[in-house]
Image (cartoon, rainbow over all chains, first blue to last red):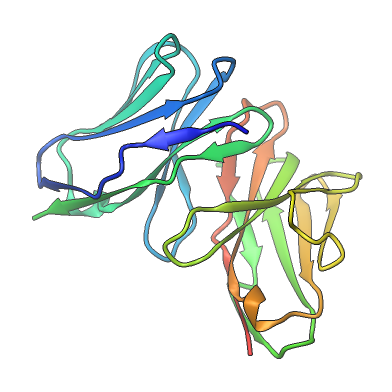
Length: 108
Length: 116
């Protein structure tokens, strides 16, 4: 059983700050990593995918992957109140294994 | 791109009846579709994986005779909750994986089922 662990949260950041989310995974052979955002009462939305070591940037989001450390992170720059949601780290080898999620609240 | 729809978005049914939920990939073909359920403030729980034209693979503890899955085409999968009971009330979400993709799953908006 693959394990995916996220920093427990909740995480509260002021508007305009950087929110940093961390995730570790147990299967060293994992190849595909994803970050999903889930607003309360809604389904998950894919915001980032990363497959290679290093950084991947998409707008205000940056995903970082370090396979040697079995670690993947998500940075949200210039956080906005609309970023307030639960962020799910997921590792996929034929099916997704999710972390428990980190709830982020951006204070205006 | 990569839009998945679900229908209905919300359904209320009486105990003992059956409910069918449809999941469609609108702008891509899906090799594999997945069905999840989620209770309030809890994590997503994978129920089953379905591939077009073959039988679904159910996760441990999920009754295949109660949750019937049909994956009729590369764009349509259905979940039928048979003989529903109040404890089946939950948020059911499907996802689809694109043919030739890199295991990215795109989620439908979910169906909220209430069994009275």
